[in-house]
Amino acid sequence: MQLRQLQHLVALADQGSFGRAAQAVHLSQPALSRSIDTLEEGLQARLIDRAYGTVRFTQAGELVLARARELLADAAQIERDVLQLEGLAIGSLAVGLGPFAAGTLGRMALSLMAQRHPQLLMRMEVADTASLCERLHRRQLDLFIADTRDLNKQPGLKLARLPDVPVSFFVRPKHPLLRLKQVTLESLMDYPVAGPQLPAEVAAQFDRQARHGKSVKGGDRSLFNVSCDDAGTLRHLALTANAAILAPLAPAPGHETGALVPLPVAGLTGMQTHYSLVTLAGRTLSPAATAYSRLVTELMSPAKQPPGR
Image (cartoon, rainbow, N blue to C red; front, side):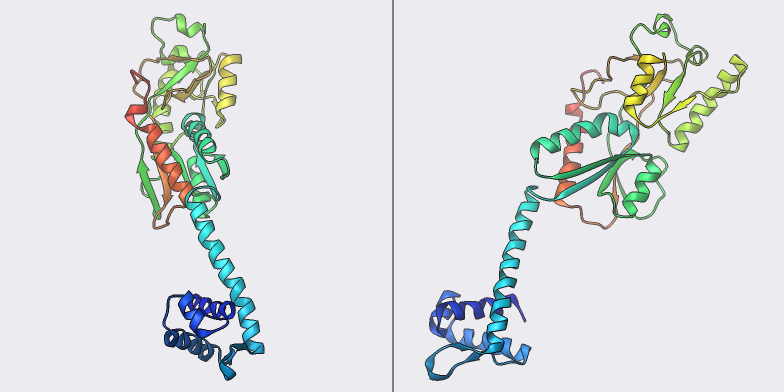
C-alpha cells in the first residue's frame, strides 16, 4: 500500500467517477483503475463496487477511505513540519559548553540564536569536557564546545577545531599586583588563584610551574587553590576576594570580562584555548544544530576578532 494509491482512492470518492478522478490526479482512466485494483489486491478486500456505472464504496472501502484521509492529512502535516524545521520555526537544540566557552562564546551564540529564531526550544549546559562527552554519547546533547586536548583519541567523535583564543589571568582594577613592574609566580601565589577544571595536559603544565612556587613560598598549595566552573562565581571572587582568575580574552566584539583587567604573569604568557566543536561521528545534525555550528564559526572567524587580538 502506498500513499499515492490512497490519494487515488480519495480522489475517486471526491470526484464520484473514474473519469473525473483520473483527470484530477493527471492519470489516464485505465491507469487509475489499475492503481485501485492494486490497492484492493494488497489489502485483499473489495473496496469499490463498480456496477451500474457508478462508484459505490463497500464497508471495507469506507473504512479504508476514512483512514486514507487521516493518513494523507498526516503526510501533508509532516511536509509542513519539515519545512518549518528547516526554517527553524520549530525544533530544539541542546548545546553543551565548557566553562571558558560558556563565559564568552556560548553566551553570544545563544543570544544570537534566540534573536534569529525566537520559536526554537534551546537548552544550554555547562560542564567539564568529560561530562559533556558522556552526555553527547547518550544523545542528550546535539553538540558541545570545549577544550578537547583530552579527547583527541576518543572514538565515535567528530572534532572540528575552532580558532585559538588567548587566555590570561584577570584581577580587579587597582589590585595590588597591578602596581608591580613584573608579576611572578611567587607574587601571584600571595593571593587566591582561581580557575575552572582544566584539561589534564594543561593542569600538568601548571603543576610543573607551581612546584617552583612551592619551593619559594615554603608551602604545599598548588597554583590554583580555588576550582570553579562557573564564570560568574570566578568573577565574583576576583572582585571581592582579591583573587586572580584564569579566563579567555574575548573571542568576538562585545564581550566584557566584567570590569576586570588582564594580569600578565612571567612564565605564564602565550596561553591559549584549544576549542573544538564536537559532534557524534556519522550522525546527521539537526537544522538547529547546523545553524548553531555555522554561527559559532562565524563568531570565531578572524574578521570577528577584536582589534589587536
